[in-house]
Image (tube, rainbow, N blue to C red):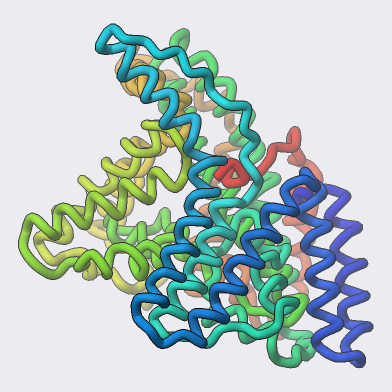
Length: 482
């Protein structure tokens, strides 16, 4: 079920109303409703995969209980390995099996001994990467004795399948989200109104920005061999905004929806395109995944401690694995490696943590130096997104080569005027994001205060009108494929 559909517009109010009507019967009834609603929400795509998420839930629930009961290190390690093997094994089969099979075939063909093994017809379950990492962190944290195992299957199953963030995150930690299912929730009007504002802005990002950019991006990437450099630049630029509007829009809707039910999800995006270097970008982009890899892979490997060789090794491992998490394609691996190359000089010069606060946090405007740093970081990011969007490495390299085709086209106004409406929408979007960059989301503190009530209400009406007016052809969320 997509957030930007009439189906969800009907589903959400019904679940919301039933949920708060059940408040007098206790949190167990509310949790059971959330569990049923989440399974209905997930089964809307393909009910067959409900068995998969239920299996993962039962496996990690059971292993978590035995991990807590067992004190012998060897037994605890065996339980952890069992959890990792089952979860990562399922993820490998559904997401990476054909990738390794295709590359195995290619390797044998290269040496003149084709084996001709056909790829299997495997359908990738929506959101498997997200809920797999969520349950893995639960088991690992019990193994590390950072949290206690859940003894309530309804609570744990609700935590795993919580519908707002089930299919595209944020990837929650059990230490943060699980206790919220175990305690009484009270309806908070202020939090609910904030949630509605965040849902509104998330819908604007998805429907107005991402989906309208997608129409241009799809056309340009499909015909890149026939177009000149200026068109390809516009395609890469619009995809940069498409993926941000699409993914951060999903996160905004998920977080806002959760607030309606009394839950607090972690922040997943923090205005990443205002970053002054790549290190800051990765502290602000897909925060739940970046911190997951930091805590469960990068730090256990040694992090930034140790020799120069280990620092370089760990940096490339974290970024390449992050790229591979996104999909079974060499384009994602190259995308991750490029980000590692961008990040490494900052780490080695110990400048990777110099931009910890949002740009111009005590001023209205950035300095010329900050503006230059933002533009450079943004430009580097645009380049990496070409690999992310391309179907394969050959297409990505051809696209990059095409950027230099007919350089005179860059100074022709026709291509830019052709998309003037979209450029105006992007300008409006960036202005709002800049003005709201100090909040949890763009509309969080924007026009706050009683004196701005009429203007704020009019502004929200404008957002609704823009969503209605620029409602492009419906596009699925990009991160559903991951």
